[in-house]
Image (cartoon, rainbow, N blue to C red; front, side, top):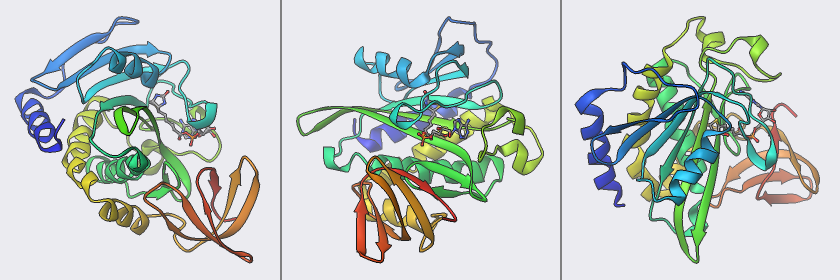
Length: 273
Ligand code: BT5
């Protein structure tokens, strides 16, 4: 779908009604159609919103269909890691079908991290930073994670599922070590409903910028928690220590080491290494 058309549709559908006033049922999806193009499907409990969104995308669900659940029993992170998803967080997945070349799929992770960071600032008043490859952090602690899963056919991206996990009202006891929540930062609870309905338009508003890869990467880098700082990267092949000196539109990170600059496509980054 053309990005401009999606923009107009989402704006119309959000303006027409808001998201409040409905009670989700356990195990039963309750589709809400918000005008053309925007549909929110809510669960009380589901294995993973990404898994559900993928099933729907395979059945030709419309772009910008959103699956959200109060609890995920098998919330997923990257590379088979698990994502803690108890009551009190915002766990949702979007289906998108942007017309971008397959080699620019990694740009999506930067784009959604940027948009989510802005959304959290606008909606919840929390200033955060981005961390490679897919985290939003506050004082180095993980506030949100983004999991992007795609289907490609030849040179084309068929769809992408953008899974977003945002720790809204979670307490320290509910979170793993090294994580934080909006509640812990602001000492105040937020409505999950309002947070979702306010963050979606922010994601949508920035969708157009996906066309401009240097703007996406530039914005990400500007708000990077480890820009020009020492880091440790764990990859499948071992650990790399050095100074983070940049990221590329293909999603890789550039680390300056004693042996020169290394470009690392994937891994887990530790701050303050
Ligand atoms: C991510 O993976 O950060 C992507 C997380 C995406 C979760 C969303 S929720 C909606 C949608 N449906 C899904 O099933 N998933 C998406 P990764 O970079 O691999 O980080 C995973 C690591 O973060 C874990 O190994 C833990 O160390 C840590 N972690 C787990 N739960 C967390 C939480 N609630 N908050 C902060 N950190 C957490």
